[in-house]
Image 1 (cartoon, rainbow, N blue to C red):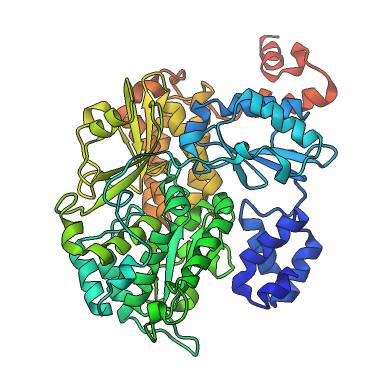
Image 2 (image 1 turned 180 degrees about the horizontal axis):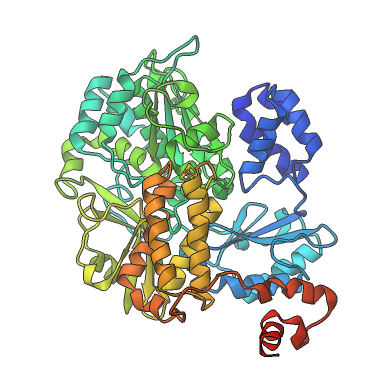
Length: 594
Ligand code: SF4
C-alpha cells in the first residue's frame, strides 16, 4: 500500500522506508528488495539509504525502541542514571534488544528538547522531563505491551517555553497578511534585499541575494522548475527554536516559503523536517490543509491567476549532516545524506538539479514579516550589520530555560541575566560546532559581526567540568560524521579517542599536541562544515579552560591508549577467571621480576 501511494518515484524513498518501518518495526532484506523493485532503484541504493540514517533499522530492534537524548544538557540533568535504571529494570544492556525481542534502549544525539530534558524518544515520539518515577511507569507499560496510543497523554507533552518575544514571536500577523501585501516579484525581492535579512542557520548569507541568484538561474530539462526548500533539520545540539516555530508559528513559516516561491518563480516548496520532530508531521499537514482551504496555498493563490504554490513536508531520519544544505538536497532526492561538491551551488543546481532556494525556518518566518510590514520596519531593529531579531534556544544551568527572542546586538551578559543564570563558567553558543565563551567575553554581542549563531545557547555554571563538555561534543561528531571523507571520518574518531584517553588518566602533553594536529587537519582538509568545525569545542576549551585538562594529564611522557589488560576483561568474563595471573600487568610484572 505504501509503494502504491508513492508510485515508482525514487525521490520518495525516505518517506517510503519510514512509512513501511512504522508498520513493520524494521526493514528486513525482503522489504528492501520489494522497495527496490517498486521504486525501480538498484537494491544497493535502497540498502545504502536504509543503512545510512540512524532512524532506519535493518535489523529488529523491538516493538518499543527507546532512544535517550544524549546532549550534554541531558547529561547534566541526569539522563545516564535514569537510562541505567531503565535498562536494569528491563534486564537489558544499552544498545541491545531484550531476549524476548520486545524492547531496545539506546542513546541518540540531541533531540531538540534541551529546555525540558532529560528527554527520550519512544518509537520516535518524544517524552520530556524524565524522572525515576516516569522511568518506572514506562517500564511497566512496556512490560504489559501497552500500545503507545494508550500511554498517558501528559508523557508526550512538549512545551514551547517562550520566555521573551520580540518583533517576530510578538508580531501582529494574520494568515495571508504577507501575501495580500505582495507587489511585483522584483519589488518584493528588492524589499527583502533592502531589509538586510541574513540566513538564520548561522552562516548569515544575504537572503535577498540568494533569492536573486535563484530567480536568475534557469532550470534545465523537460521538468525545468524552481524550488523552495525550508531547512527544518534542526540538529545542532542545544537548538530547539525551529521546533517552537513549527509547532506554534507554522503559518508564518509557510507564508515565508510562499513569498520566496513568488519571488524566485517556484511552484513547489518542501519542508525538510528532522526525524526527531516526527510528532509535528500531522499538525503541520493540518496547517497546510487549512491554508489550502483559505486559498493561501494551491492554485491561483488569493485568486491571482498564475500564482500557484504548494508545500509538502518531507521527514528526515536522524542524520545531523543533513542540516548541511547539499546533504539535505541529496536526502530529499532519496539518497544518502552526503554533502555535494560546491560549486554548483543549490541556487543554480539544487533539488533534482534545478535552481533551489534553501532557507532556514526562522529566515522564512522573518521574510513573511518583511513582506507584510516592509523593509524599513525590519531594518530599524538590530544593528547596522545584523538587521532584525534572533531567537535563542537557552538551556543548561539557568532558572528559566526556553526560547528568547532578542534584537541583534544583545550582550551575552544580558541573556544570562534574563534567564536566571548564576555563577556561569561558560556558554557554548551556536552548538557543538560553535564558540565556547568564557566570563571575560560575556560583554560580547549576539550579531553576525561578533558572535553569529544559529540559536543554540547552552550555559554551564562553575560546578561543571568543561573537559567533559568538550568530550561529549567530540563523541557527537564521531556519531554524526557521514564517513564520506577521511579527514573527518578518521579525525573525529582520533579526537574522541584522545579525549577518552585523557579522561582515563593515560594522557600527557604528547596527546595535547596530537589533539591540535587532528583539529588542524579537520579544519583544513574536511569536505564540509561538519568536519571543519568538529574540533571547535575541544580547541576552545583547551584554550580557555586548560586546568580542566591539566588535572587529568598524569603522564609525563607518551603512554599508549590501548590497555591490554582492559582488552582482556571480556575473556576473563567468559572464562570466569579474575585471579592476579589473569591480569596482564600483574603477570607481566612478575615475569620481569622473576
Ligand atoms: Fe561527511 Fe564529515 Fe566529510 Fe562532511 S566532513 S562530507 S560530514 S565525512
